[in-house]
Image (cartoon, rainbow, N blue to C red; front, side, top):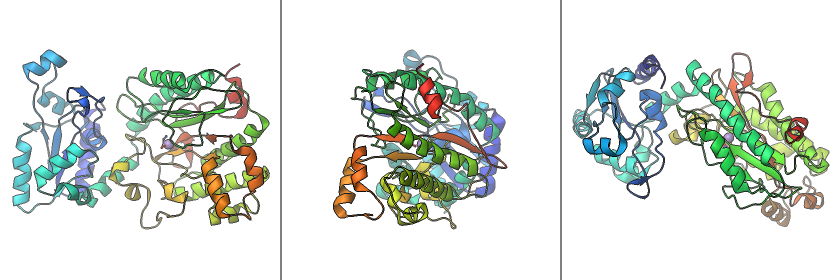
Length: 459
Ligand code: GLY
Ligand code: MN
């Protein structure tokens, strides 16, 4: 964990946003995989990790009137027999600068007392069933109403704190980018005819685990890259295909990395692949060149979209002007997702708080238009933001057929030419950026990305 001063300072800043309000935080519990004692790998709740640093199940905390209390139970002899010796709750709390601890069962009385004094009990939106049930039991709010009863004041305060990363957080992410790098370079080297997606997936996740944790999200490793979040691994690589790998590692302190690379099977691109690849790379580079404090990430999305439209005009798939294509939304046939999202303790950082609050504000509202509606971050950038830059071009046969049958954008899309791309797959190129005082920089060593760099990997 970070030093106790890091957590103390976060709680102090949170208290400044929330006065002396009663703030309730439930850490995660173990989650059963298929029966109670066979569990998923434990993942602490990110809000809890951010404020209290304790990476253990069954902890809760209250911050009220400038004081923090940890609610948890010391392990029993039975626990020690099965799990080994554990530090006491008091010792764990003291490591993060907290001196007041109570047994977990005291939480129900303390919340009831706050409610009886007509105090509001503030909590962030729960995303697990067991947390919803416990919040309901503690507060009396019906299960179905718990999520919508989360505190906007606390959510806004947490977003303000977590959006601008501290130096220790940036160092933790950057240190761990080396494992993300190895995940991708391993996959790029393995992208040869006859290998299976499953073998490569296993090798990628192994590289991540060498860093001390799990993966940050289920690895995408597919020759069907046109399916944006393809989590199947049934394919056998064939020459002429593109292997798309979107993968990230979970650092020891649970910060994510998130990169995507696309590699030709056998290591050499065809000319047709090179043409599309270079367009995606141009879009990625354009975003890096222009991202800076004060710039709306929505405008970076539109910049990437125009770069993609221009490139597709160049290869004869689209017609007209890039401005007009993007204004009418026709590019979304090929780029149906957003340019990126915040990254931190969650790969889509703070998404549990509601992406509208994280990525949008009074100035920048979320669009309902196809493609743009998948943009998770639209608001102006600030120094310390960590964001992903992940443009892509995809040829989705089902979408191509639907739009053609509907006669959609007939004046823009050259449907005859497009038939040559039915089996192309997809290309996405994703880097993680730190917004600096004057611009931005890529976090970690850049994973090979130019056509030459990618083609040299298997030499
Ligand atoms: N890398 C997965 C995602 O951004 O959704
Ligand atoms: Mn991403």
